[in-house]
Amino acid sequence: MTQAGTTAPTPDSPDELALAAEFETPRREDWQRLVTGVLTKSGVLPEGFDGAPESLLTSKTYDGIEIQPLYTADSMNTAAASSGYPGLPPYARGARAEGSVDTGWDVRALHGQADPAATNKAILADLENGASSVWLRVGGDALPLESLADALNEVYLDLAPVVLDPGADYEAAATAFLALLAERNIPDSEVTGTIGADPIALRARTGRPHDITPAAALAARLSGKHPKLRTLVVNALPYHEAGGSDSQELGAAIAAGVAYLRALTGAGLSVDAAAEQLEFRFAATADQFLTIAKLRAARRLWARVCEVSGAIAGRGMRQHAVTSPAMFTRRDPWVNLLRSTVACFAAGVGGADAVTVLPFDFAIGLPEAFSRRIARNTQSILIEESKLSGVIDPAGGSWYVENLTDALANAAWREFTEIERAGGIEAVLDSGALAARLAETWEARRKRLATRTDPITGVSEFPDLHEKPVERTPAPSVVDEGGLPRVRYAQDYEVLRDRSDAYLAETGERPKVFLATLGPVAAHTARATFAANLFQAGGIEPVNPGAADDVLAAFRDSGAKVACLCGTDKLYAEHAAETAKRLKEAGAIRVILAGKAESPDVDAYVHAGCDALAALTSILDTLGVK
Image (cartoon, rainbow, N blue to C red):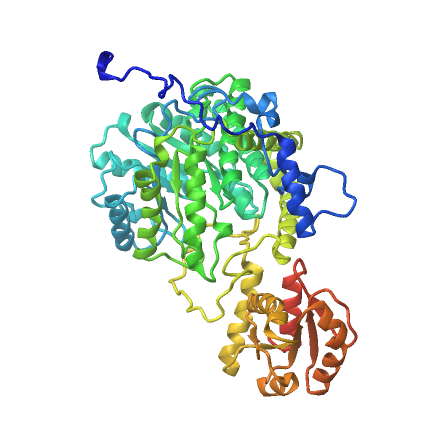
């Protein structure tokens, strides 16, 4: 035995393990050869193609960033490789050297209903069961400011920070909140939380001017007396919810941060004190890698702004990540649980300081106790059971993530400088220039949603036509609309489902399409399954007779007025024209073919990559579904 009781090395126990030494070192050429074989067998590789096979597997984000199928050490450029260390500039790897290892990130629960008793009950339940801070909407149709004390009854405000969302009433909210803290004998130096003033986001939401000078003056008054209290929020959700891309969300947020820095220093604060007054709010989506890269890129961008501005203390951006309201669906809302879990995972890995998981029924109305509990527990499992916060910057060093962070940071910096050249964030909001760019991105996204290139599980893919609707009390509207729109990715499909529901309520049955199956089950199952999935996305009930002996008789018995041919290309060549003609003679007002094979007497075609929304809308119009 050697010292400390260890065993001395023997010929059978080497000093160092050469893991996988018996395997040859793989080369990129080997991988390309295997990819070529798979693509050739699947028919994806064009005949005579002599380029790199991986070029056929690349995709692009809405910012034009190419996503490669494989990243290696050779993929790293100098900028991507220099992401630094956690807690040090450029802060891509985190604003704190220890990350969230000691405490986990801040689990922040959102509350927005007007009833103070119900709000208080929900807040206490959250704080007793895993939440560590409160995000509270006040003013307008949300919680009245005069009910703030009732809503925060029995809440230990020296332990649980409160982040207010007061809209235009931020000065009154600050007065009410600080009065409550004084009433509870909390020393000014120990007051924590955020007042939540954000006149730029108000401008974006309402389309009306909101001067940032009063907010800066408020911050100047409070900063000296309450050193741990933040006054301003840079909310990037308006740009995300308008359909914008990740770089547009980042660029607008950095531009808003710069505008606040100018106003705060103009109000008499040092640039360090000004930077410390800001908290940034970003959307976390189910695209986990883009979310991770976005949060890392945001810190890098803000560190550069602070460096140029001369700030030192505020370089490490304070981040609040919120699961994206745009990705939430009203139909099959249970799938939102999965989307939120992925988004929360990405926010944690990306290094967010605080994370809000919106309840799965958020898009429907006010959440219930069950949905709040699931939202809390999603974070608790990731922090406590999965130990996600136990690793500092787990994505650091990933060739893919580092490259994506660098590419997104550069794209966002271009967006930011474009805004600055146009006069700043307020100028581009007032001129409509930013709204136009966001609308352009939304239209590009909308086309991909319409063709199901960007699928929405439970809505555009694998919908449940017979799902039981989830009903909730309508949520209050906090901010008047009139500025940037709020969109949800599922909204166009949900309009079609609403039309179907209205038709069902009026007639007692859903609009139907008969699947005219050609040949045996093995011949038509693939396209019949595809067509059924597609039609249900529009609230249209598919009637599948299976391998019917007499398709025309089955069509007449179905009561349907629209038919869809389902079979193989060979069967289409032999029977589609005649079957379509006879279906029309039997009463079909429209005949559709599932596939791309053209045939006489067929009125429309549905296939992978077609404009599903246009096809479904046309069918409902044909059937008279208003």
